[in-house]
Length: 442
Figure (cartoon, rainbow, N blue to C red):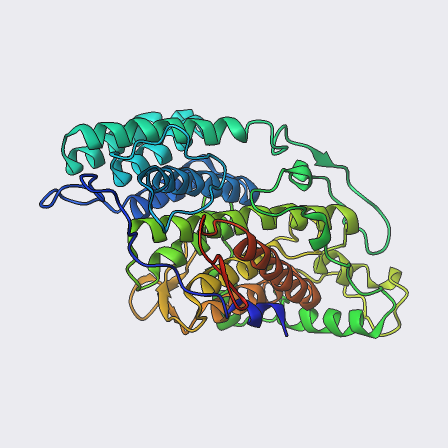
């Protein structure tokens, strides 16, 4: 069975927790306003990534840490209460969790603790937001206990990831010769980052592009030469490319999948929502590892260089076009194989479809780089029938932009889906009772 299709068989999230000991508040007392901590603090993480101009891998790591902090804080309190629906931790066990702590307060404080440590320049605005959110919850010993626990968990999540291989920044020198990416590129340390959820990222490294002299390479070459050519204006293709382009200063491709998760029209109780975004965050962050590994190993040239230098590739079916330029307006800043937009999209789509046990959940999205719709004068607001449809569109946009060959798109989508499959199957499972049901990991 195709891996991506198999992911759609995952059991949906569990319901409202049961088994809370008598006298322990399940959340906040009746009548106290609620705060959607997962929604609010993912939005804060997106804003920080934009403001800090984080890379795609840095952004994915940030989203994972914030959501793991919230999940472990919420789940730790459930464990302390003896809740039968409590689950295994992501990074921080439940030791010290207060059975009488408020889970929303814990989630808010955990996210704040992670983000302020990762991005101390944003501390003022983040602390102002935390103060406002806590004020909405009111006061009481359960709020105080939840906040203190969340701060501990967030700090521990940050500390646990300090030496995870995501820093210091490393650069691969420029290569040379037919088929080889000809520029230096930074961020290659992510190939050695410790995974959040995978046992080992190495098995997911792509097998590589087809040989330059092959017919498969020539076919992909011909496709991008036409569809991605800046000299062949096509407003529709350019708009799709721009919609998914997501350069520095946006929430980055992983951030769009966080936004898609937030846009899903299915309300969830806090423990389930925290689990959803922890799984999604882990899938996105861990996908960055084999993505960078694959680029580092194969160092494949981008279409612009490939088409301009086709006389060197040894393939009689490719034709050199010295002045060919990519529709994107730039040649691309890292090796071509594999497409990171595609791998992140494959992971995001598979994680969401797996969690909800359904791919075809319609949603509407305005990306951070969406072009203005001439009909409305507003950023292009697009509706998708489901997660895989959006992932396919995002991956295809890279071919339309002249930045990737189709084999890098397809292999990237498969890579991300496979990473998500392992995480869904093996992480954040129930602590007691049946943790699996058929092919669907719980």
